[in-house]
Image 1 (cartoon, rainbow, N blue to C red):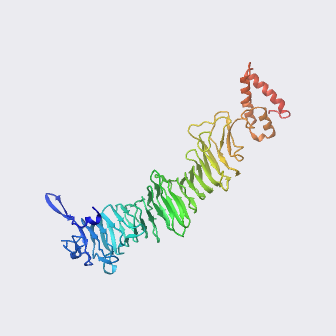
Image 2: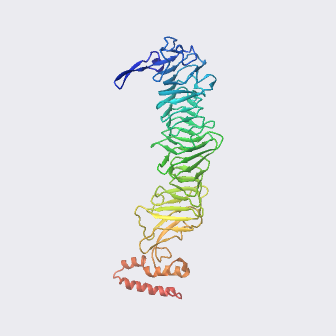
Image 3: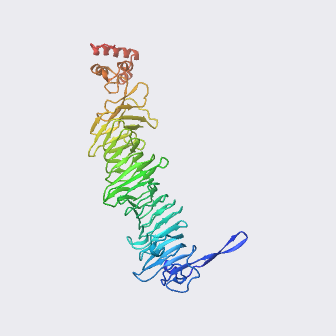
Length: 545
């Protein structure tokens, strides 16, 4: 049965309740229809028990168990309905072709409360139906307000405040709902359906905002609660339009699975979205953040982690003031990492990343590759790299600028390397930490994990090719063995290492491999003595000690 047809008959259900030992009759639920003959809510002759008729009049005005229906059929007609005092109903239905406006008091000088129960509000979208500024709507339970009609048309227009209490208020339908009054209370708000929810006031509700479809727009200085920010979550679709506002939210998430969620700036004024994530609630946003018209800035605050895994195209600044921003998708522009903040991820950042003193960069998701347009590590910044195998970007961290416009890696601060997943490097292994055609600067300090006995980290190629290698103590020419060539390298430049390391490891590598392949083989001690003797001859004028 259609909604319009269902209003042709009176709905009357009688229930009973036991209070103590007394059986009481509870008022029946009814559907009462505004007949258009009056203007005062409290006058019984203004209501009918039958749709499209002025009679029979009800025995009482609509009450907490009743649904009030407004379905005046005259096209383009307008009627104000004077509430003349607080009213309480189960639900409101607007199917009128004309314009119905609920007014609290004569002259609009006295705020009047309208309590709406779980029946919520329904508008067919045939015309705009609204409440005046002096009407304060109070929710008596969780409910849905539905604006049906043509996409883009306004079906419900609320000019006064709405107190949702601790309830959840859901907005549905294909037409628009416009709220000029603020939403308050501890409950949450859900937007579903293809229509637009237009918030045009400074809202103070402290529950979450869940967008499952359509759009929520902060138009005409509309705002979410800045003093107690709300968390914003998305389903498989939905749009939040900041419309040039500076908005602070306590979370930004999308549900698992594919999503077309969008945060955008539909205004010609620059917008800023600040996401303050607490330490206990890591957030993942897989949608898209974009400009639409003017630029949109993103600021990360709070001690928690915000992960961006979508393809974000906004052109404003990205600033990490606190906590961690993890980029597993892409950003069109650069990132500024401030003191005490972290940048992580295995995605792509199109322009320059600047890590200030006290800030940190940790590429990868565990081990992974972060691609950046350029990187500037300032004095006092920290770069954390993990090594768990030989493959760059999957088994060990790498910062890559290949193929992007700038490509300069300006190194400073501290490089801190750690081993993960039980990995133990071997002699001769190399780890390409930086893939860039332009390396500049040098770290003030390098912290490296301990290696097995006889092995040492070699950083001589770190600022040349971006590689960190594992060498044998004394392998000064980095060819995987310790022989006379290493002594020559030390002789030409004693700064390459400690001669004692060469003496203790002389013969490691190719000499030992060759000796093991020979038959009969001399005793290892004899081979070592022969090599040392040869080394003395090669050394010429430079003695061992």
